[in-house]
Image 1 (cartoon, rainbow, N blue to C red):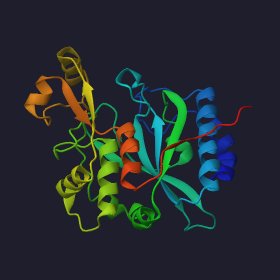
Image 2 (image 1 turned 135 degrees about the vertical axis):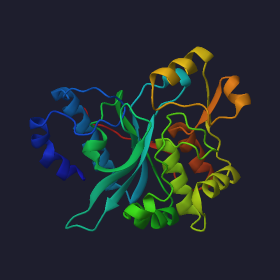
Image 3 (image 1 turned 45 degrees about the horizontal axis):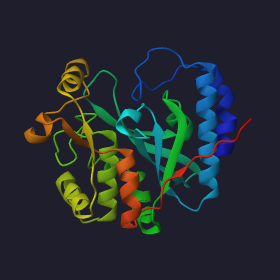
Image 4 (image 1 turned 90 degrees about the vertical axis):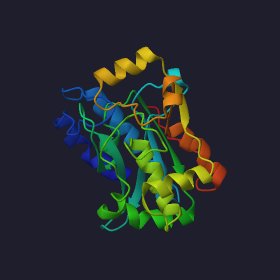
Length: 268
């Protein structure tokens, strides 16, 4: 979805104030407010404008769906935004993994920029990292092929999935493993993708979680599990997981992407 398309659909979205997707940052079962729609669409339009002006056809796009400030993290969710040139005019689409609310299952979703930013973010801010030209060429056909993008998808979902286990998979982890597969086409399966990421120096974020926090999350949230983490780390409250911030910090070191840029919104 480019900036012109977003403006053309804005009036329709004002009529349908309920969000169609409930898999995302919150599980609120109520319609979006007019202000939420306006702010989400303004952010989508700003992102489209900035991406349209750039040369990249594939970027990693981040949003702030949850407040992770207490862990020193700025962004919560990562997806691939790609320029689809197969129609009469290019449009931006976002491919990402989301957790179905109230369940331990995740699935892949293909959305426009507007939908991506209408998922009740905690902050109406975004950032993106333009991938290297070689990685873009490898990723673009992959992202447009439903069978290929699902090759490394594990539906069993945990929000704090251990990066070096195949028991569960969270959203950012799927994106990172898919990026690894595109970077090294000979890789076979998640184990190979994770081994390649380790060899390339990727280091996950380590969250410090108290026993009380872990117990409360495990009992009250279907999409949180800790049993895939090594016992020594889990009992010490050191929970390693894939975060947007860790991916954005690692990518420029490998030459796979430029440094992340913030989406600049116009003041009205």
